[in-house]
Length: 338
Image (tube, rainbow, N blue to C red; front, side, top):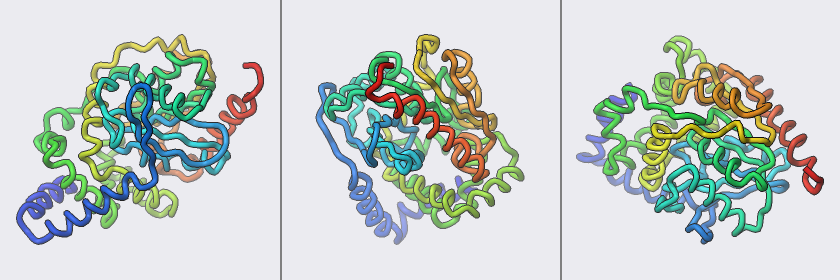
């Protein structure tokens, strides 16, 4: 149903009176998206980033589509006494893709950002498509990374679904010309009819049947905190065109990712993944757990790839575990021999 809305909406935008509303909306969103971020020149190029909170620095490799605007998935760390640094990965917003698209280059660009900000050591969090860059950062800059957290994170070569590769609408949405109009409609659907919009997420982000998915949707929207995250995500993915190169690069990376020497990672590692992940699959989490020495895996059900949605107690429990993990393996050891 949501795809029918998108197709009809694209036709309407092109032919009828909401074109003016759309243009005004796009102008507002374009201004809003970077209102709280900063741009800095590093030794490897320009980086746009968001930084908030006070305390030891957590370097956040953002997931696909969102960029630095996806910081809210880790808001509990800001509240828990950490400084959250979320740079736009290459191809997102003000961080140019240039020659920085590979996971290795993404890691080195992040290290250059730390140099420019005079930050020596960090804990690292990789979410979803940010997984490869986070893992390469830990592998390439082991003296700077003191703890690693992987949340629904890619760690192995991961193919696209049949819909992603071959559907007419999928190819349409991934065309630069239709990026902003299509995501305008997705944004509006998520804000105005979230119960319907999230049904599409059941199909793409979970392995549930629709009956089970609808039960989760009711649970999500009944919880004010989770409902707000849905609204935050709706805003975090627009405007889409300034993220298009980054999203396209992420898709290329996940399909061509070489085997990573995860067995070389020596820092404490915590992994959270859903066995109902319909996007990248639970196998990415189990792969990390099997290969990274002494890694801890927390398995949840939740709303598939979106482990932050579903049972509120499950969310509270694994976020508390993340905070304890960082307190024990990062904050408490700062300034002490490691």
